[in-house]
Structures are given as C-alpha cells and as structure tokens.
Length: 488
Image (cartoon, rainbow, N blue to C red):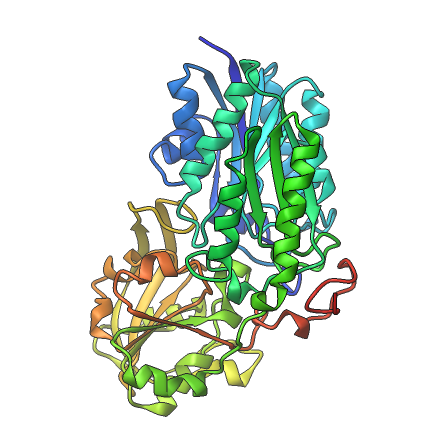
C-alpha cells in the first residue's frame, strides 16, 4: 500500500441571526459517518469527498476515512454539539495516526457557541495534532467567510467555482491532486488570503451571469499564470455576525509569495471597482406578477428571505399567501411543518380539513385555509445528477401533499431539506410542468435543478432571516469599513 491519507470534515453553514441552535439531532439527521460507510456513501457522489476518494484510489494511496459530519444550514452550532463532534473526530483521528497527509472538508462559514470561527478552530486543532510537516489541504464552499486561522492551519484551500455548486467533485479532485503532488515533492503550496472591504449580496452570487460570470472569467485567466496552482473567489456568507464576514480571495502558488500577493491584488482591485454591481435589485413579489403573467410557465420564484441553504426555517408562507390572494396561478411550494404533517396523517386521501401552516411567529408568513389531502408517506428520495450540495440521499421525514381551495399544492415535510433536487417533487408524482409557478426556498442553489423545467427565474425579496438586504441585520462583530454598510 502507498502513502496514507486521512480524510475528514465538519461542515455547517451557520446563520447567527437564527435563534435556535443547531444540535446533534440535526447532524444525525444530515450526513454523519465514518470508515467504510463514508467511502461507500461518497465514492460515486458529486461531492468533494467523491473527487478526493477518486484521486487517492487512482494514486494507490491508503485512504483513512476518519469522519464526515454535515447538518443542514441553520443557527450556530451548540456548545455540546461542537464538543461532541470534536471528541468523535479526534478519537477517530488518533486511532488512524500516523498519516502522511490529510484532506479536510470544512465549509468556511461554521459558527459555534464556543468559537465564532468554528472552522478555523477545528482546522487549527488538526494542524496541532498532525504537526507542521504533514500537508493539510482542503476544500471550501465559496459562501465561506475565510479567517486567517483557516489559512495558517492549512497548506492550501480551494473553493468551488460554481454557484449553484455543481463542480464539487471536480474541486475535491483538485484538492487531492495538490496533496498528492505535495507528497511527491512536485510542488510546495503557498497560499495568500486577501479579505476585501466588501460583502457581496447573496442575490448577486449566481456564477452563470454577470457580475460573477465576469469576475470568474478574470480569475480563470489569472490562474493560467505559470506558478499559480489555484484561485478561489470566496463570495462570502452575509448572515454570520463574525469578524471575517465578507468576500475574500485565496491564491495558491507553487512557493511564489509575490505572485500570490500580486494576483490577489488584481482581483481585489477588480472587485472593488465593480462593487456597486454586487448589491442586487431587491424585487418584491407584487412587482413580479406582471412578469409572471407574460412569462413561459412554469416560472421559478426564489424565496430569498426563507433560504434553507442559508439557514432559514423553510416555513414562511409569505409567497403562498400572495399567490393565493392574486388567484391567477397554480403554484407549488414546500414548507417544513412537522405539526401540519401530523394533522394531515390523521386524515385519509380526499379529506378536506382546516389547516394552519407557516411561521407561527409572524402572521404575514403563515397560512390558514381549507385544504384537500392528496398523499402522505415517507419523504426519502435520491438525486443521481450533479446538483448543488453534491449529495445523493435525501430524507424529508414523513411528508404530506395537500391542495388549497385556491388550487395551490403544498408539500409539508417533517425534516428540513433544501430544494436542491427536482426529485423532491417527481419522486412523489408531483409534475413540475403542471404548475404555473414553482416556489423554491433558496437564492441560487435551486437553479441547477429547476432550470431543466423553468425558463424564467425570479428572485423575490421576501422577509426572513436570510433577507436579501444584509444591511437590515444588526452586526456586532464584523469588520469595518465594509461595503455596502459603509462607503469605500
């Protein structure tokens, strides 16, 4: 057997404006596995772990699948949860030592009660455990808020280049190749971080069109320079009140510090010169009805204020109420509401009953009405195509499908699952093309799945803990000055 490489990760996108903490239960409901189970789950997945496994197996290296834990984005990770994750991780890592190299999978926007820079903290512990001579290389979600501690604890970090994230496996392959070439003494990675005085609106983070498309084209051109190993545009995650919140750039070179610095500076200059383009339009639902009327159906409405991928609760009926009130479109929406599922399960298909669903803390984001039960059952489904998140297996818990008196269909779930796959509908005989409007609780992540059926995509400035206008939130820990909060 060849060289021995540990593979491990703790992944969470933490929204500090969500009141409820993320607990062990959420990690157990997500993806938490070790050993062969980890390898079997991800070997064929469109996930960075899949790419890492592929390269290491190609190279004949011994893979030590230590642990991978991921929970659906939500509030900051509770103290006991983070302590448990660390204990599990390092108990497993201790039993695997010694190793020749280590591949890590942080998110980049993890926050815990104990450490606001959660990813920087656990990466620093990995570095402390392994020592300075063992290369540690990993991947990042471009929604990460990158700290100096994350960078100083690793030899190289590379981020996905697409949003929606459909290049995760490719990014995992890149990270693994960098590690392999480091172990073979072919390269000596050196990385440089530039934290910009800029926070890009989540609304403007779609890499398939301007302004991000132009930015990534520049980064791609600069990456062709001799000696540059990778360039990562960190778009940032605005819903975390942490010091490192904001956009940044990571340049990895083959031991060429000045090249890394100068390349990063060129990207910084471009981004700051175009900073106004990264603010977004902030369109309200009422402003979009005329566009929906004249657009080819179905139209995808992206519910930015209740973005599950940003940690939102997935229970806002704001758009459902607006569509019911307008009364001219047949729509589909998915809501997380375990209580409503239990109510539905107490009935049989065809029953008509009164139901309340949505956010109980805000009447503008809840719905009350008579509904007809269509279906109840288990909400497990699989996604076999490259989609945002790179996962294969999904579980919504018990689900119920109901139709309102206004003709709108609601999928009610017992577990919170982001809208990354159309199989969330089609696996339960919900045909997307049967609707005028599909509502997805996301901003950019659902686009990879839904553009297969939706020709028109409209981002909606809805209220909630992932409201598109980040300047509405109260921050106590962020850097200053930073645009658009302050003029630069």
